[in-house]
Image (tube, rainbow, N blue to C red):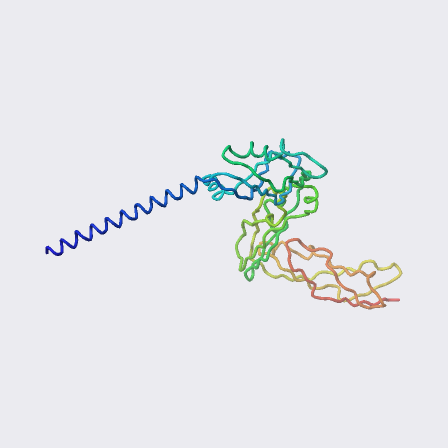
Length: 319
């Protein structure tokens, strides 16, 4: 028992010695760090450009512009540059001037040192000494939105009317040279399978792929569509021959053709033969052919995949 107590006391003393050792080691490390950070160092840092107060009538192109600046300052200040990306602010109302088709920034080291840095920082060098910014006049243009879709419906289902985009157009703002070439903005591809219910989907636009100097009034739209059950219908439609010269007496067969179509159940009973018109244009006959080609001149908007079953109409000319 006595031996165990002695052992515990010795272990406790040893642990305290270790703790004191690590405490002194930590203090020595902190003192070393403060000593290093208190010293003055010279280094070159890349500063990004922050553009402010750009005139509303102008748009400055988003070129990658940066300054390599050599500074002399203490270590504590250098820490701020390493932990946050340093920037130089350029005021387009007072720091630049226009020359030809660019804004020009050309400031002395003394000016930059007095306006951008504190007293503890000495500016030694700037590279490049002159910066140029391309710009253009702003243009506002309204362009349509184009749907990029690959939508597959379940068997017996289809969209009963055209797709609805909300909004169906957007405003594009940017340099005239860029905006004038934009005729539409496409959506990201909408891929859906086995659709049998009405659609209401949020769809992103491909605005991110455009030039960064161009701004858009929106970056997404709502795609809507009414989806219904569909069925196939067939009707006999009279054939009319047009553009027959007055001196020609024409006989043709058949007088009617079968026309098939795909339509929603809700519109099935509203479609009749009078909604269709099939014609054969005699003026298109070439090389003394005795065949006419039937064409759909009219069909209802609610019908899809409208097809004429009979592809040839025979005719003879009676003297």
